[in-house]
Length: 423
Ligand code: CAO
Image (tube, rainbow, N blue to C red; front, side, top):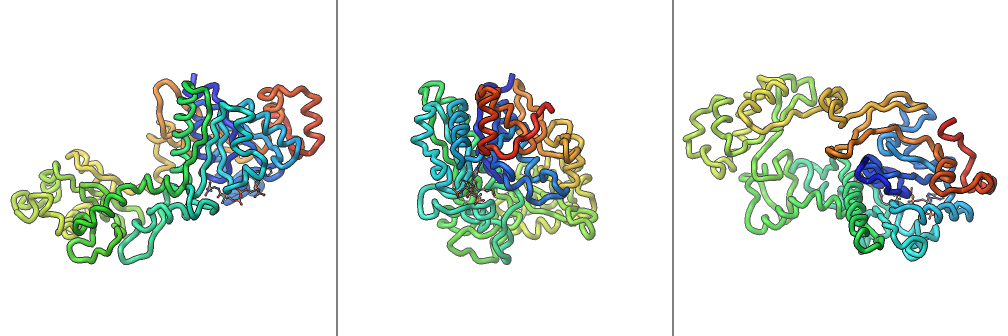
């Protein structure tokens, strides 16, 4: 038994934000039926391809554990199929550009008419306001949500981050909204609309920076690298690698940094282990020296303190430093490359990195479910081929008889007839 067993999701999502949401729901046990445009399907199937004519890793890594049906939503009979699916499913998830679903005739009013219990969940770039009609991709959301202006170094331009906080982050927010709406439906019997705007999702993840914006009114941000010598303007500046929390931290070089771009460690000068830090790096006098003994005294000297600690970290590899510092409970983190993560056996053992077999691609790695539940285990299965389950869904989910299935195929609403999944 899985947590969301019995929940049927009509997955009208594409690209990244929506698919991350429905993939999570599939891992939690929901039956996710991905509706795709006949012929081409989700645009990511063909984007960033590494092997010709094979679904890209972009697609396969965002669409595990789903079934695929191809339906032309603008074809009369395709619309009929979609409306039957709306009547059968519990949740419709979509991340089309604003207005696209309405243009298909699937307004919220129509959806409620068809199925008052339906939860309709959407990702949009922006919530209601001046930008509500804009199309939005990941980095647009990072910029509009406050991440880019606060990321990077003070003397450089704004930076986007590698973590897909706009897409995957918003998918996560939406998944939570869907699960909560399903829970509320148990009491009310009604569905509801759930909206996660990417700008809002990014801002939610950047809330510490809005905290700092308000702190700025009361004086300089003393844990920032701009303190004490630099200037603070009227907006939160980029903090480089400074910690966003109350424990100062920085990225320091380790042995091999000259040739290895990831031979670095994140070092946190947590106050309760200051004694251990001083002993490990060989600066015992810092324990009693009034310039170093107390956290507030250290703030204006962080640059030189980290430079001294770096002299020590440069004598160790990042893994040696990690081992030694953790022996003293000093919080730190090696800068792991994607190669190291892909090869990490402990991540494989927990199912966080999973190898999956695919009929046309062969074996590939994907990121498994980061949420581990004691009574709802996740087995990651491969992404579906385009339209692989079209007939299976018409037959088993919509209970259409063979004549009806044949007639819909004949109409052209499903594209070219795919092979049955079992064939
Ligand atoms: N059958 C027929 N038509 C279909 C279809 C199907 N099965 N599935 C989709 N379509 C049509 C839509 O109806 C739409 O047509 P109209 O514009 O004529 O109404 C069309 O495909 C394109 O949809 P779109 O506008 O959503 O796609 P796009 O590539 O132009 O824009 C994106 C992509 C992501 C910018 C836009 O969808 C968007 O802003 N989404 C919301 C924010 C979001 O999720 N962004 C994250 C993207 S990941 O970085």
